Image 1 (cartoon, one colour):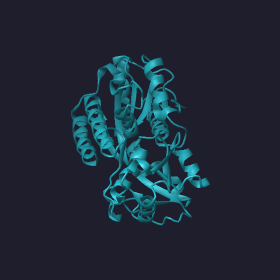
Image 2 (tube, rainbow, N blue to C red):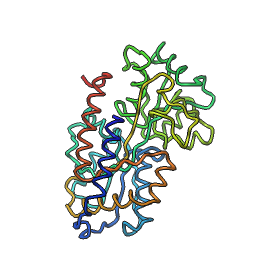
Image 3 (tube, rainbow, N blue to C red):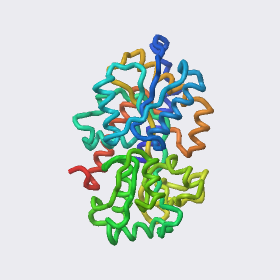
Image 4 (cartoon, rainbow, N blue to C red):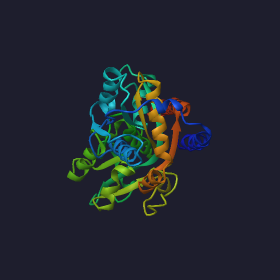
Length: 329
């Protein structure tokens, strides 16, 4: 998946430089724009919406401010159903999405839903997953934790800010497989409605580890409340060279998570062109790129037909991965 992300990013950058901006975008102006984050505050989807809302306003790409609505439930399924069934023709709403969204669609967790039910707007970044424990945890590195899981897969409760079968769940399953666990489905995963809740559970001692993305956990790491035992990246992050990768500890697992947005399929062509144009301009701004770099998020841009092609391939990848680790038959 990492190789596919890098290749798609390079192609998307080239096409973005050559493609003209859609003129239809000039024929639409949003009224009361809204971004739906399908989880509680503090998680990755919330980060997408609040970052997008801030920069669209700061760069004067939308008139006025954008409302951020946190809509929890069903690992994003409540928000997906709300948009597709109740607001399918709404021109003013966009929704945060990530690899967890495509994972749910691949696995059929959004009952009766398909990727074609919404209009995929863009990806604008990708970041790597991390595994974190509390600062006083007996697990001082990834190996000590994986050894405990190999001895008893139910002995370590791992929290994630999304449902069973999501990418937060898949990441530790891939690590367990690399560690030699016979049946990775026995792993004890505890699902929460957002990364903030998962981290609260870790700090309270309700769980022993958290699977999430770096942007979700960074603040707790910098405050010293948690210890990151592994970054699921091919090499150490430049801005955080002290954090070890899973790969260097003997577990060849890469976990890259894209960040993006979708909107109602029934929205007007003018609205679709407007939001694609606005998000493209946002990603091209030095201010936005600086914010991604500060959050250790790599640029990863897909728009229009490139975005749809990426979603199709990403769902195919997640389907294959889910079958490999036993989530799908």
